[in-house]
Structures are given as C-alpha cells and as structure tokens.
Amino acid sequence: MKLIMAVIKPFKLDEVREALTGIGVQGLTVTEVKGFGRQKGQTEIYRGAEYAVSFLPKVKIEVVVADNAVEQVVETVKKTAATGKIGDGKIFVANVEQAVRIRTGETGADAL
Image 1 (cartoon, rainbow, N blue to C red):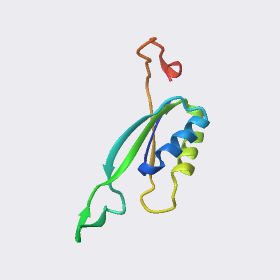
Image 2 (image 1 turned 90 degrees about the horizontal axis):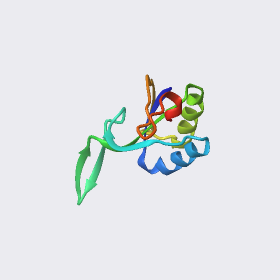
Image 3 (image 1 turned 180 degrees about the vertical axis):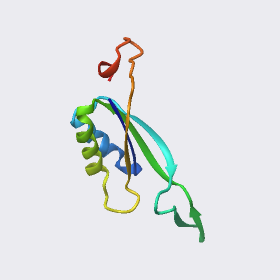
C-alpha cells in the first residue's frame, strides 16, 4: 500500500476529488494548509498598502491505495490539478506498513 499526498491549489479540490472518485478511489482526507515553494509567497495590496504574504493557502489531499493503483492516481491528480502556473503543488508517495479499519478490524488492503 502507498500513501499519496498531494498539495494543490484550493480551487482545484472539487475537480480532483471528482476525478479520483471516477477512477475508483473510495476515500480521501483533505486538510487546509499553508506553505510556500519556489514562489516564496506573494505581494498583495490591501487598502492601498502593499504587504507580503509569506505562506499561501493550499489544500493537502491524502489517499492510501493499493500498490497497483499508484500510477493511475498520481497521473489523475497531476493532470487534474495542473494549471500550468507557478504554485500548482507537489505529489508525494510513501510506503504504508499497515492499515486497520476500526469498525470491522479488517487489515491491509481490505481496510481501504
């Protein structure tokens, strides 16, 4: 099993969720986060005063999938979340040692 974490622009969340549901992903976790990458934040103007925003709002999506579904999920997120502009985000893939469904006690891929 693999944990796929994607940090994307907030307005892309619904589109990514629909695309993942369409390929059979049954559940995911979403967290509102803030961060910066190469763009190092941005400058905004509020009531005529310019100020720097160091951390930009992002959304982190986490989904655990079987090993054979990783490439399809990564490609779906990459294609759906892309705008072609700086700050589109990142995708990380990590190993998951164990998963347990609390209600039934199922373990491993059956718990997904």
